[in-house]
Image (cartoon, rainbow, N blue to C red; front, side, top):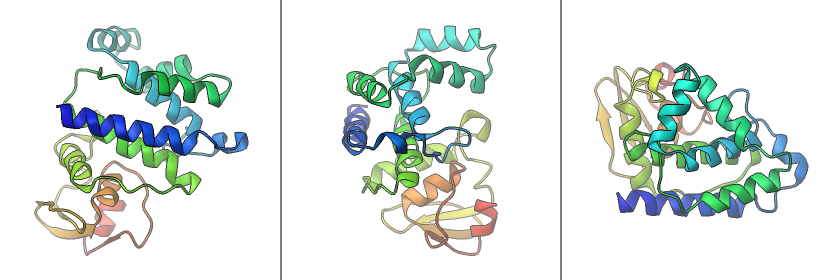
Length: 205
């Protein structure tokens, strides 16, 4: 568990560094999350970092067990008028080790997928630790789409990472970096040259 939190803390610090000099007009750039701009995603990450098990249960009940409403409420609560203030709030909670009642691997999914939700539209690059991205990918493959995973998207496919030891599933092959596979399984768009194989259409449709 300590290793996961070490990775999460490193990723949060890297994202803060990437965004601390972002021009004001770029905060409204649409993210890879439909309907959210990059400022919205950062506010979600603030809310996520502050979440505790009891708080999650109470707030989910207040949202009538609607996860979309739960996330929207959290975003509205943590999004400041000034993006710089939201970034400062993220930095203030960046070393926390609290989370919703979910497997710790979800923290890796949040760090990597939401990191790319922000970075890709802004043309920012980061080299993530492939073995930990693969751990996030394994979690997504074991988790249904309704719970934020990607199990159904990868059904009937064999996913093979080209940058770390990862080979999962049976069926038509899809090859690419662990990050590209993670994003695709998580329902995010990837560039045309990031993934290859006869199962590509099925995974990205």
